[in-house]
Length: 372
Image (cartoon, rainbow, N blue to C red; front, top):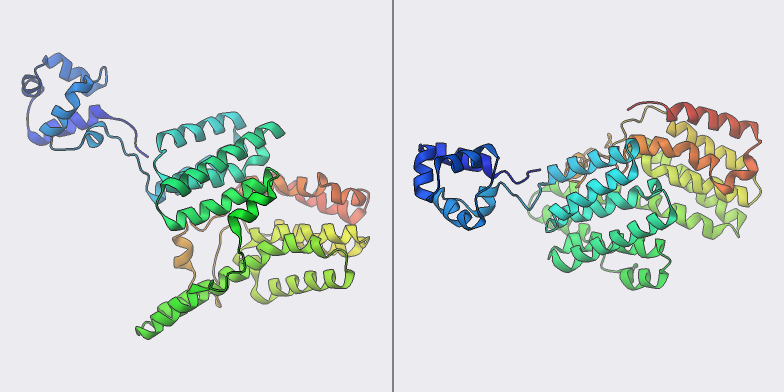
């Protein structure tokens, strides 16, 4: 990430032309001392000199000032993960202020704005008050609206639309969510099938396999993104609820999801256990929580997305993610919430005195103090 550094540009431009400070001063109609101060950063050229300096060094004014209004994907990725770590280790207001500075500085870098929206949404739980969380959610929604209106990038706009919908739901505006996302059952979705067929027709079977395999992986993970919301809708049918949990656990084992994408499973386990508590089946609730604790305390850190012998063509896809193969929350943030997800969850209040539950909490408390 670059800042304004006109002093370096003048020094490098002058040396590239092989001229002295005095020669440049004569050309600009100023003293040699003025040029010296420009180069050492003691003062800046008057704004009226900028076009003349830029023309003399054959560069744009932005280049002269060392200002880059855009960030590369790698810079965005690095900035995101650095700020994510800071949210865990530094005062919330200080990190939020740094986020605001970054947003203001790169307000026309729409990929960055989208990632800043995702960053803020993923770290709302660190905000000190409900009012602060609401304000940040509104700010996140506005960033998404700007990306949609100004970026001219359909993919960015689609992602921003989804994040905006999440914000609206959090703000208590369900009708706005429906307006943003309907229809969800689009019969024309699944364009990866067409892409794979086209690659095959072009004589590129490897690309066809990769496209199809990525689609399988993506849809598999989508199932575990949806199940935590689907489970609570079925607590009125004990048999159906048990089938959903059993099939979810079966998919996890069948595809070894714990090694492919461990972070996506925590919400499924918690939701499954909460439902069993509501149904009055404490033993089954604790059985599901055992999966949660076992995964949380396994050697999965640092958490990343990964392939395996079955999904052997997805690594390139991971590498192209905006945030790389890492989840949007840092390992420290994920671990910090592990104990709270059990002890601060009203759904598990009935388990507080249960010995199995206490043992799980103690096991997670040891995890909370671990370093990366």
